[in-house]
Amino acid sequence: MPKQDEQIQRKVEHLFLAEKYFTDESYADFDSIRLLHDAVPELNYRDIDLSTDILGNKFSLPFYFNAITGGSKQSARFNMNLAQLAKKLDIPVSSGSMGVYLRIPETKDTFTPLREYNPDGFVIANVSAKANAAQAQQAIDLLHANALQVHLNVIQELAMPEGDKSFFWLDNIKEIVEKINVPVVVKEVGFGISKDTMQKLIDVGVKYIDISGFGGTDFAQIESARNHEIDLTYLDQFSMSTVESLIEAQPHMDNVTIFASGGIRTPMDVVKALRMGASAVGMSGLVLHHLQKYSLAEATLFFESFAKQIQIIMALLGAKNIDEIKKAPIIFDENLVNYAKQRKIE
Ligand code: FNR
Image (cartoon, rainbow, N blue to C red; front, side, top):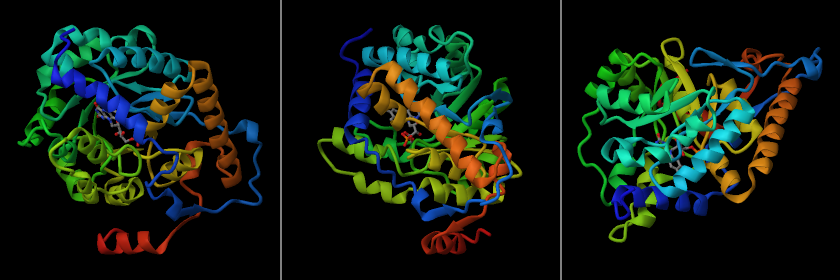
């Protein structure tokens, strides 16, 4: 692996800085929503079914591990643990951006642990929206991936000293959606997606969107920490929180499948995102933190308990399965009502 490469060094810094800034507090607006319990739920907790369809496959839990890393030696070790955790929980797991592999094929061994340690699991390849269909296919082939994520990261690129400055992405996305024969998810990286942007994606044929909103990992902050010339942390003000992005998604729910991520910290956040129409919920910062700070066995216990708590919350809502969560009464605070009103979303 080339030692002095800037792109590889960036991966090392991302892992380090994301963990450095990790906090248990989320700013994803989930605290601005309440769900009301059913005092006569008429169910047995043990019968509650958490199984969920994710990208055409049935999983026993409604969450997945979202894109994190690849490219550096540290990434290889991390991906090995992440793959084993995903295998134990039987949930989908994404690779970090494979742009570095497309440019420097010798970095392939930093991505392949995701498949080696989870041979029968659901693995998602990840490329940037500047990749074309042939490159996306190369990324899929390396991991024998079951699906592809294409990330949108304009705020991150502009906050990054060495970032891209040109953003013509829709033609690539259209080509990828037309030519790639695994499900293609277009995702943000933690700044959310507006209803207007969603419409542009739907118009080029996108069927799956991960809104990945603001509230957890903040790449304006991370890239500004790497940028010794200017502090562009304030660019995160352009973001939409995960809850705001889910509000933005409401007019499109019939035309596109929505995944939610960004600042997911608790089982309550997962249930609230599902209540707002997400078909499953993704986490990066939280799993990164648990695998960096604790052993694989401890991280497994944490996420098993996390799943159990989703089940407890569902019992309180009288929801026997994930679909029934969508019937739970929901209350938005004034700020969110005002947000929806100004955005003309019912
Ligand atoms: C990311 N994320 C990300 N996303 C992506 O599509 N490609 C990538 O290469 C990366 N790289 C990456 C590195 C690190 C260290 C982190 C923590 C995250 C973004 C990630 O998938 C997600 O969209 C955001 O992190 C928001 O979710 P959390 O972290 O708040 O749960």
